[in-house]
Length: 273
Ligand SMILES: [Zn+2]
Ligand SMILES: [Zn+2]
Image (cartoon, rainbow, N blue to C red; front, side, top):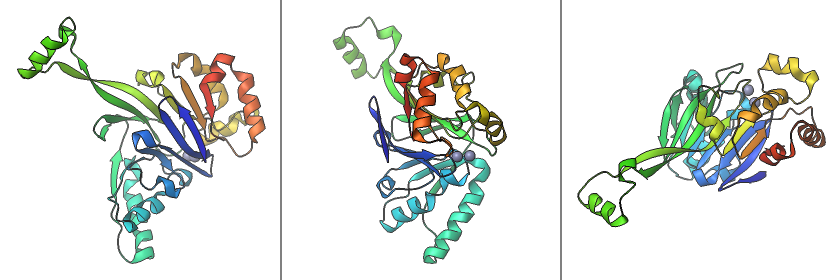
């Protein structure tokens, strides 16, 4: 299992195109995609599924059943609305096959534009992506209380007094923490400007060679040339690339990526291979 440190976040998991993608950020108590479910992921309470290709969600029965057997309350699972009903039927069938009853689980349909509040200080925006089936991304922001501008000139004691009198001196602001783009051949930077400001961006990069361009178009995946185009617009400190095709070995991936970017951009790039 790969373990990457991106400032105060730790990304654990793995990602190989067509095999499985599962990434956990313990500090935010969340998992992005669950193509396979390591036992260490069971206790994590929020799962965000990008789309219904097996390599992105087929760890769900393990996640749900292990929690159910261990009598842990159901985790919150978010998945594209388009396939939620079918997913629910599949989970119920597997559950019956396993134990003649239905596991307890919580499945929430999402669609682009949704704003999901979770934990007490986090929100996830659901982003539109383009893939062969409905696919969504997630932008997770931390909600913090900030002093309203009209009170900036006051001393601490004056602010405390206003608070005591019941005046609301703060307002919530949202700071992007991490964004996750599952399978896609587009990145919605214009529609979601906060995306380019996310300190950490996890992005698929299935194809890296020019001769695979046609395959990228057919399968609706992102490729290295597209990343080269958008990287000047990205202010992200960490750009984590995932979902490389199995046709490339690790040395080829590292060499090819290094040859396409400036040393400064190479420092921002982290690879999950
Ligand atoms: Zn995939
Ligand atoms: Zn896919």
